[in-house]
Image (cartoon, rainbow, N blue to C red; front, side, top):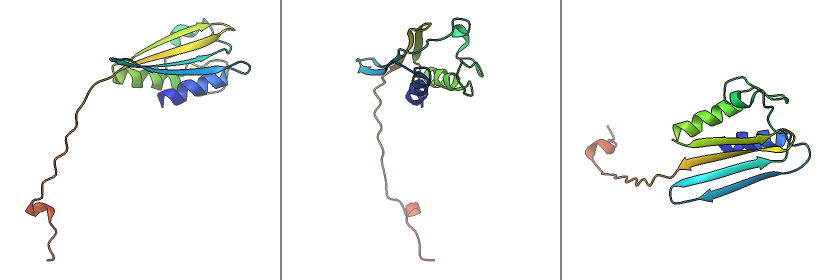
Length: 117
């Protein structure tokens, strides 16, 4: 959902030019950069774009970036935005990589068996 929302916005605000996605893994982080050469973010709303119902110049609900920010925070990640009016925008997402080991154990017990009664 994070990548989908950011790509959707990049394409929506880039009528001419390009959209780029870069995904990199370090020992500690997954780093995703989505950049475009679109119209950029209006400086008047740049500091508010993660608040609900703050919209740019194109149609939309104004909750996409709010959801993106919420999900990244839930994963203890970081989100940076670089934008220049009429030059484009880059969103950089950093999500920590945690090594988790999951072990599932299945034991057969009498409770797991079905009886024909």
